[in-house]
Image 1 (cartoon, rainbow over the protein chains, first blue to last red):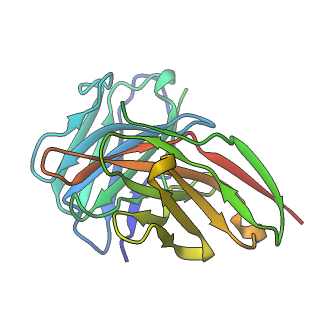
Image 2: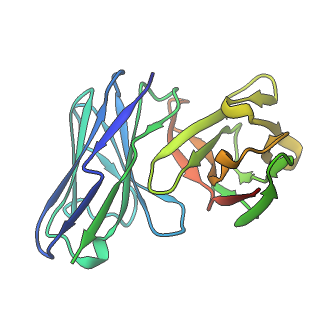
Length: 115
Length: 117
């Protein structure tokens, strides 16, 4: 159990476009979802934490207007990279947790490439 | 400040040999500790976790880890490595929020494991 599906797995788009990434918990309800960014050969950096039905909490240095997060239901959170530029190219990974006392379960990530 | 250190960036072991991946943490309270494994181009899979109780924790795929408070360590071990274990391994500490529950993970920089035939 505790499967998280992330879609798309890879996206390539032109600079200036907006890209939406979906994160779904398939067999559990995720009251909290997390979005991470991972640069090549580096660790995961937490971007934001979202709780169902409330605004996301962003980490210091993460632009909330750039990275829009929506967590409208207990099984779906979305990350929209607005007006994406080449420096936004990265590997984005989401995770979900049943509650704050439970481990996070990760999606397979989205490789975003901005040309 | 909270931090996790994985001193070994890259380790190579022979198939069948034993393995130990090091992890040290810095955290002011009792930590929640995790080990995750990441295959290329994929997300992370939870290997094991320590919340409290027995300091020797058993995980999936034959892995275990031991929490040593005096050394601020949570090293991952496996007695006999298989070729399929080649991947990147991340140690993480869960950060307590005001309510006493974890809501964030601070990751180490990862250790890339290569397995020789």
